[in-house]
Image 1 (cartoon, helix red, strand yellow):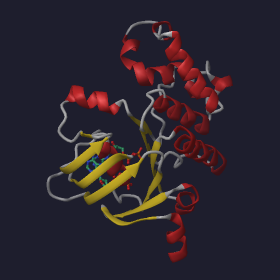
Image 2 (image 1 turned 180 degrees about the horizontal axis):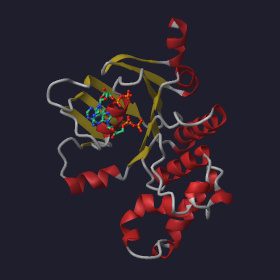
Image 3 (image 1 turned 45 degrees about the vertical axis):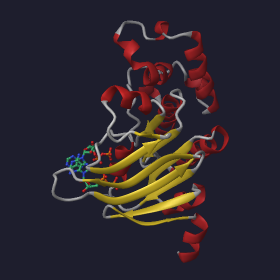
Image 4 (image 1 turned 135 degrees about the horizontal axis):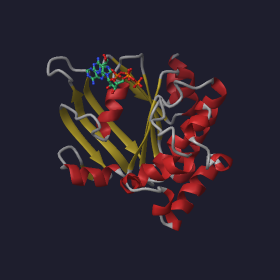
Length: 239
Ligand code: ADP
Ligand code: ADP
């Protein structure tokens, strides 16, 4: 089953230079795919075009059987709940607890009122807890996020994306701010998420060795164009 298809995506921020161009891409359910390339290649721009966090200048985005390229805000919001996003700098609310951050991700509109936790149903809380437990964060649930290590913060970022029960998880340089040990923990979790939960995972990375170790497929991006889209095995033979 194809979860995502990009057809001829291009993006210009200034209507003059194309930052990415001619991007075609297909992702199947449960696939783990990495995008690699030097800084400035357009990896982040491409990832953000997928959920229209950045509007592509041209091309089509077909997600979960729907062409979302032209959808209005309300319809897009509905589709976006099925696309989780994980960031390099975590994007957590540091004065809130782990639990609050995770619930906030899915049900953010409720938190405009006072007393965040009281607003969620038992079912919502159980889902958040079970995901945090799977990610090894059970004992940190009631800590404020500013008390966590980088690796722990990133697991909260992943949990916040997973409570949406996404079909696709977009990860923009998820380990770029982490030490090698925390990076391994995060990559192992992302791999597990694709394999056992069947969620499609698309990850921007700049470490080729990490991409080779974890990916089903690797896409190489340079100066905004796709250089290759291949199996890690074939790429390591070419070296
Ligand atoms: P990567 O993720 O591979 O490092 P980016 O997508 O972040 O690449 O950036 C690609 C190019 O697009 C860079 O030259 C960057 O400066 C430019 N760029 C990124 N975001 C914007 C923006 N909001 N406005 C203008 N230029 C941008
Ligand atoms: P990060 O590494 O956390 O993604 P960046 O420095 O790449 O941070 O980008 C931070 C923000 O600035 C992003 O929203 C990005 O789109 C924007 N940005 C990056 N490059 C440019 C640029 N050349 N002009 C305008 N905005 C940019």
